[in-house]
Every structure is written in structure tokens, then in C-alpha cells.
Amino acid sequence: MKATHRPPLAGSINPQVAADRPIFSNSHPTADSVLTTKQWLDLGVSSGELRGPGFVQVIRGVHTLAENPLFGTLGLRVQAAVAATGGKTVVCGTTALQLWRVHLPFRLVSDQRIHLLVPRGTRRSRREDIAIHQYRDLSNLDLHEMRGFHLVGPIEAWLEVARHATHEELVQIGDGLVRYQNPITSLGAIRQFLNQPGGGLPTSRALAALADMRQGTDSIAETIVRRWIVTSRLPEPQVNRILTDADGQFMARVDCFIEQYQTVAEYDGMVHEGEHSRTRDNIRRDLLRRNGIEVVVATRADLADPSRFLQTLLAALSRQAKALRLPIPQMSPLGLGK
Picture (spheres, rainbow, N blue to C red):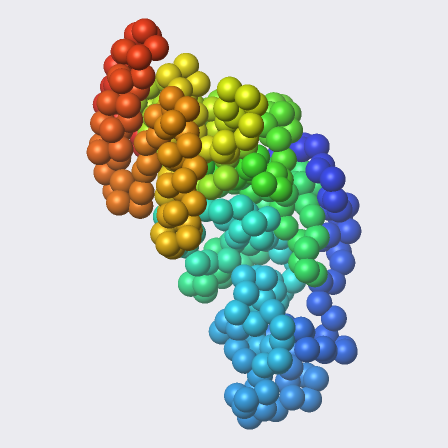
């Protein structure tokens, strides 16, 4: 972690308090207690009882009661990882982002390790289920408390991921921070955070991603579709635009709207595959087309190769260009993966 001062977000806690405060109480275990094998044994629980139906092993060497209501959740796995490493840890990186309910690109979400910051000098764990990162000074971190453990703020976590994520992955995660529903932060707040003195490579990469982020998307797939369009040098669409007819009546809220060419681009994932969803989508899209708006849809099949979608979109834009007497757009080869 680089030693730079970061302005705290709402809900931050005093870093020194975070370092000194015991996270778990061992003296009075409850249904949601998460303790190491040694801690349970010290409380009088036998090895046989730990192996019995009343307990479950969350990760190697850490157990909880079988009745724990958090069983099977990421939060419980994080509690177990914190307990296994001795308690003086801070959740960071992709693990923190998931706890902040930020969706991650597939490559990053497939990393099931719990990412933890520990004080410099702490012996590194050889566990395969925990990734240890060392820090110099807690006072430089934007810390929060959640479910009894400490974690970095969402922007700090995104900045940490900038060390190993691709440009497009950073844009996808960043769009998730400023999403349409329940945004966690704003583009302005991220810019203010990154413009603090002392930035290094992660900050420069994050600033480059920030320039390509847009407020108000609904999903990673929507960001991917928008970025296909932009990196192909087609006109950039507006995201989650509400469209009305000539009388001002609501028609639809669409994923991407290229206003100049009156063209909509949308992504249909699994949520659109049911019969009711398909019928509703067809009705709204027919309404848009009757009002002179072209609609082009990307599906999961396009994620592996977006060329079909982009060629269809280019054809729609070209038809609209002729109808509206506009220049016909030109498409460049896709330039993703920066």
C-alpha cells in the first residue's frame, strides 16, 4: 500500500481504533461466533464436538455453530479468514468490493481467496484460501466497519485492484461504483480521492479508467456493450436514457441510446430469457420502432465475439443516417484489452 493520506468517506472509523479494537469476543460465544479450533478448545468444546453435527468448519482450522445464520455467505468466510490470521487485519481488494456489493468481472470473481491487509512484518500465510497483503500505516487507509470486521472503503478497494486488473475490468468495476440503482459513490468523489498527492502506478491506471467510466449503468454487461461501441469508434451512447414519444409519454428506459442517430443498443442476459420478459421486451421495442427508433440487441452469445452485434449496429446506424440525412458512421476494429 502506498503511504498517502486519503480523505475518509462517510462511515469511516478511526484507523488506530481499528488496529487496537478486538474484533471477536471469545468469552461468550453465540450462534454467529466464528473461532479457531484452539479458541473453541479453550472454551471447553471437545475435538469430537467440533467434528460433530453441531459445528461446521468454515475454512481450515476455523469453526462456527451449524445454526449460524450466515452459513454459506462471503461474510462468514471473511470472518473465518480474519480469525485464522489473528484478528489484526483489514479486508481489501476484490473481497472488499464484493462486500460493498460491487459486481466483478468474471476473471476477478473467480478468485475465491479472501484478500486481507496485515501489518508489515507479519509472517505471510501459506494458506491457499487467503491472500495476504502488507501495509505500512493504517492511518493512510479509508477504513470502515462491517459485520464485526474492518475493510477498506470502496474507492480504496478499487484502487488496490488497479494493480492487476485490465483497463476494461477497471472501467467495469468503476461503473459499478456509480451505478444507476443505489450508487455507492460518484465520479466526482472518485476523482477527488485519486487526485490526492503521492499517487503511483495504480493511481495513474485508475485515472485512465475514470476517464472511460460513465455514471448510471445497471450491470457489467451494459458497460461491456457501451465499451464495444466506443472502442469501435462509433458514436458514444448515453446510458440508461428514458425515452418519450412526441407527446412526452414514457416509452422505455434503455441501456444505451445514440441520440443523434435515434438508435438503441441493449443487452439481454438471463433475466430476459423467460417468456414473460421476452414478451415485455418485444412490446416495448416494437413501440420504439414505431416511433422511428432502431433497436439492436446483444446477447450472451455476443460476449465471446461482439462482431455480429457491432455489424448489426453499424447497419442500423447507416439506415438511420440515410433517413435523417446524417453522415454514415465508420467503424474501426475493436480496441479492447488495454
